[in-house]
Length: 264
Image (cartoon, rainbow, N blue to C red; front, top):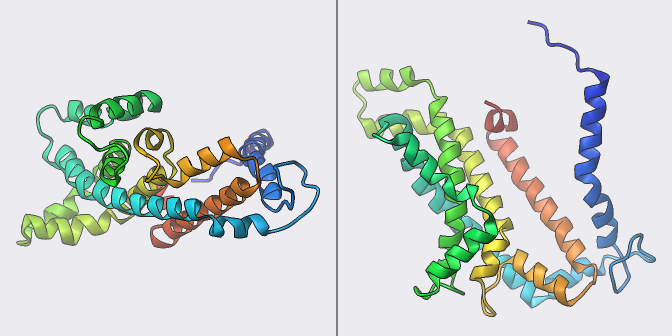
């Protein structure tokens, strides 16, 4: 079947949308190479000193380390919890599976500020504010719905006859799961891990409610830095974060393929 040619109007609209989405980079990237002491566009001088300033800022480097560690822990727990939950909803299909699926995704329907306030009220009496454990629990509330949703979709699109064939040949249920189901879910697992990592690493509103003077994530540290100073260091850090995001996307592309991961 021949594909229809893309109309010039659609190409033009797509180009305009891409330019709109990339417009902030057109401003941020030049500012990140500014030699000025304050943010100004266009810069009056050029330098890479603000990139070096990032690595000499103890608060930023400590916050970056916490954000990376936090995102890794949250991603691992999201996979360990989301995979069994998705399997139970899709394969076992218990009573009220649709209601349970809606319940798991309910946190995504709430405004983040409302969710953060609710988490603050619940976690404060438990002594979880300003702790790494509290940050992990707060981020899991946001990442688990994504994990369950993506993994459920990945499971629902798998060919069940392949699993049934393995079972009829004498494979135990766990063997079928680990030898047949998981390999076929590779793209879904990779996309879930990438999504959970980026969501946790980039989360700022919930982290503002949970962090304290002795524990801060990178987005929160950047937020407070902009409140106190107006130098181009935040622009340089933003460019590095864009590069980090591109690295994650490239890893997904190399391991599973973007088309297989995000297009069903």
